[in-house]
Image (cartoon, rainbow, N blue to C red; front, top):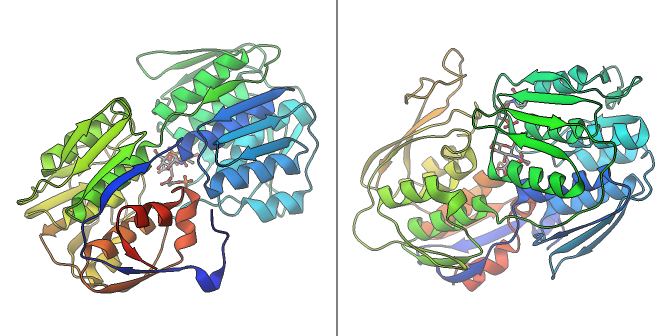
Length: 443
Ligand SMILES: CC(=O)N[C@H]1[C@@H](OP(=O)(O)OP(=O)(O)OC[C@H]2O[C@@H](n3ccc(=O)[nH]c3=O)[C@H](O)[C@@H]2O)O[C@H](CO)[C@@H](O)[C@@H]1O
Ligand SMILES: C=C(OP(=O)(O)O)C(=O)O
């Protein structure tokens, strides 16, 4: 993976050529980082396989190392070995320097409370797609018995003077992070925890699988209630990460937008069914094989769709941004109602400059109950197509928005300059090499 060099943080793209060929997708960004944090719960060795070479893995490896954990990354093999036999308290300033690019440090709370008796959580990073509060995380930790001190100038200091104890917790919204927080904090708590209103994304279920391998006692009910019986100790695990369904859908969207044909080796049908249904409705074709999925544009007009993002098994918010670029090429009016993040359409402004017709609305243009209906956020988009796109100078705003801009530049005629592309390294392994393999004209 390229390191960040501000001088070289630009990709020159000459678009207008269909992407074609085969690429490989490895483990999910939104799982591997959490599984790496889980390793901290056990005073032993854990081995995670199918790990992609992305910046979030680097950040979590470095955070673990700051806490005295031995982390060995074999990037080519995709194997990360974590020896958490000994753990120490990291220097607050060092943790703070590392935290800015990811939201993972908040998930260190439970494991550090068990191993060190206290945790320091710095200001968090991650994509700027809404306000992204951590109130559910802190409420959960408090319910389990933690003391949260927000007075620390560099972040939040958490202690558990009387240890952590099982509790009844209800999430006001099925937050992925807060569900993972509860799992990681409750597995070693004394007694039983009942988490209702939990999120059940496949990445969370894979984390549950890892915790079960470690010795945890967790059950997931059909009504989104997760029950955790605290155990006394956990052991290291060996696990192969589930594939990245967001990266797979991003390449599928690139195939559709550029009239291309991409075989995504590693993509798996079960966790992508909702995406595949929408892809087919738009007019894209796919062929599901044992080792991956081939996505292509069959020629002719693409059809408009109305979609609403939602928690699993709904249409993922992280699929939305790349797909919007493909919808600029569909014939007619498409509607995308974003119900997970209040501010995830900023990336459409450069698309409009490139020639897309996209109108943003504060109203809920959909039927799903949505937390933003009373508030002043542009969280619905109407896209009218097909519109030819023209190359532009674009600044990458966030991870998925950045990948969408790459797709737009590849769809457009003429040259584009996509700036700040290293942000895309957070979640797309070797995307420059993959683009070259697919015949993209990039420099
Ligand atoms: C590293 C990672 O796995 N990131 C994913 C994770 O983010 P993340 O875990 O941060 O997302 P959440 O599911 O927690 O957030 C969903 C919504 O809940 C709100 N909320 C969340 C926590 C809280 O304490 N209070 C609160 O109000 C958020 O502002 C957001 O509007 O799930 C999201 C939803 O699938 C994905 O888009 C992200 O890619
Ligand atoms: C929003 C995302 O990530 P994060 O939560 O790490 O910012 C994403 O992966 O699209």
